[in-house]
Length: 69
Image (cartoon, rainbow, N blue to C red; front, side, top):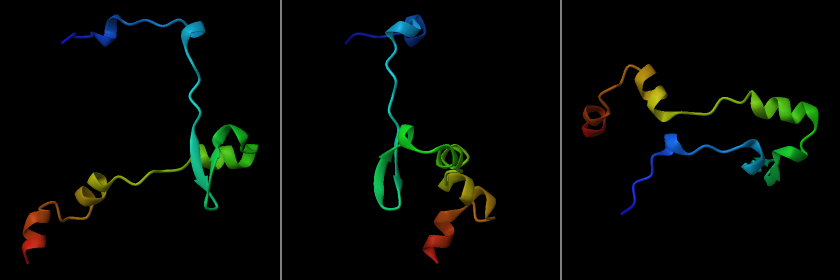
């Protein structure tokens, strides 16, 4: 098995390839690059749900005891 140290890998900007981001809008998948200025702004200000943060903030950190009831 070959071990790769990712800190040793250096890419020039000319070697990089842009990543196309797609998202669901009104039931259809669309590339973000095709959005108008307002929709792009809305997309980049979205907050994503994180279950771990929701559980920590609800006062029910010990889920196993709640599920057993």
